[in-house]
Amino acid sequence: MSVVLVVNSGSSSFKYQLIDLATERPLASGLVERIGDPSAGESTHTVLFDAPAPGSGEGGTAALDATHRRELPIPDHTAGFQVMLDAFAAHGPSLAEKAPVAVGHRVVHGGARFFEPTLITSLVEINIDELSQLAPLHNPGALQGIRAARAAFPDLPHVAVFDTAFHQTLPPAAYTYAIDAELAAAHRIRRYGFHGTSHKFVSEAAAAFVGRPLAELRQLVFHLGNGASVTAIDGGRSVETSMGMTPLEGLVMGTRSGDIDPAVLFHLHRRAGMSVQDLDTLLNKRSGVLGLAGVSDMRDVETRVAEGDAAATLAFEVYLHRLRAYAGAYLAQLGGVDVISFTAGVGENSDAVRAGAVATLGFAGVELDQERNRARGRGIRVISTDASPVTVLVVPTDEELEIARQTLAVAAA
Figure 1 (cartoon, helix red, strand yellow):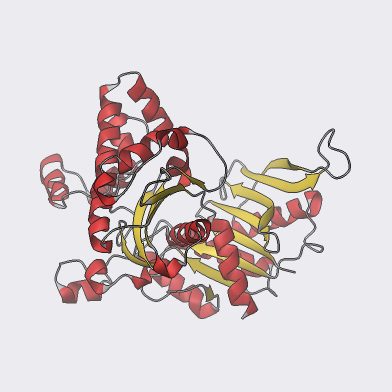
Figure 2: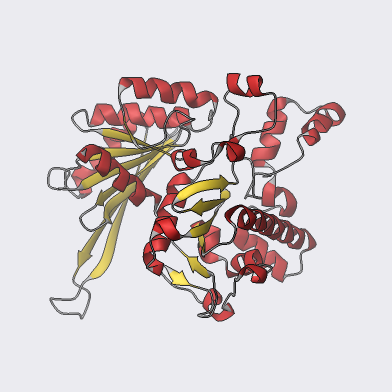
């Protein structure tokens, strides 16, 4: 049996997926949210299965799913995991028949301590807790989920898969900030990078798709969702990435500013009387596309651009300007590129963003096929021309599958 339960926990919710790695397909997925809400929590459990397709005869199959929802008090993560177990028992698949061999946990920040998927022990829990200083919005929730899951599945190995781990191959010149070295060391200030699980999955999938060894390829991967990052990958190793000590640095995002002159913060403190918390909220929740256009969803931005909205048009242009700036910088670091991949919600679905991001990269051998780029499709697809020296791809990411793969590898070892 090669079934793995993947858990992604936040402070008031957790998502889960039960994945059969024999087929690399999910059997069920769910979301438990509003944990700790005094009114009521919510649970959604979706069972995925194959059944005869209507009119297809005995041999035909069609993917079906059944979704079940509940509202009930969920005081903490431990109660939330019991709700999840109840959903499996009531609606399937049976955890006795599809018994997981391990539980994989997404953890955002592993600092410089964790550079690979790690079997969770009490000491690892302590380290994740201590690293909450670097990720106060993410690691505490992950730790709550880990403790609840270990209580729910005490006999299974639990594995932490860190978003930062893939970027532990960054060279010192890429991860070092030019501030007082002793101060930086004392407070662990350096670039760590994020979305590593996605960047790893996409770069490996792209190499397999083009039929070339990963070790031979120079790649750019644009993970463009509400959070966004780009990574330069040389021979399967992350050598440069846009997010930094936190997920705030780098590209323009849905609600995050990305790169900004640090002195802007001093100016706002002095002139606008903004506190540290005010500035934190501004840059993380009131900036980016939302701050410029008034909406954070790229679909809404593009609709407004088509309607001639000036603010949305500027937001879109700023967004693309930053993408091209990073693409050019990373092409210089890599000395050229063989494959460029777009992934995540915006990257997979916005042909306008993809076209804009590579519009000026003809000098580097990028030739986009506009018809292919506009076409909708599922799975990995090529959007560059057949003659393009650089292959440009859309690669749907699957972080849960990547976590499951890494978890099984650790559990099997």
